[in-house]
Length: 141
Image 1: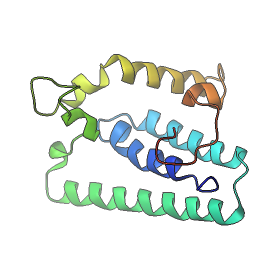
Image 2: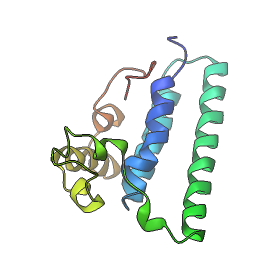
Image 3: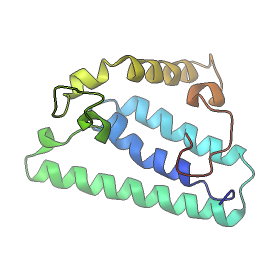
Image 4: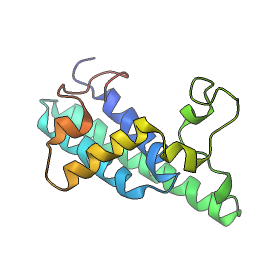
């Protein structure tokens, strides 16, 4: 549905695994702030904005709960980064890459670089997200 920022909801939630799990909370916070700013800049209905707000609140709460549970159980080191780390196309030898390897991937470094450039005020939201459209649907952002 065009008035529902589903893609932004997914991107927001996945950002915890894409950035934070592997130790790059700074990039994760910047990315999530950009997603929120992008939603504010798009012409969504009040209902769609409220649904997005509720979704990101629940996502952040669920991630925090999972992280705290992992810490309490002594298994923080077992948390994995993005699901893509386990895909054969990224790691043809099978098994997940380490966070160290993931954080060195050219696609990750490029994306992080755009986020840092945004933080320094060198580029705008659209360039930082590498997208000028308003997110609507699972494939956006």
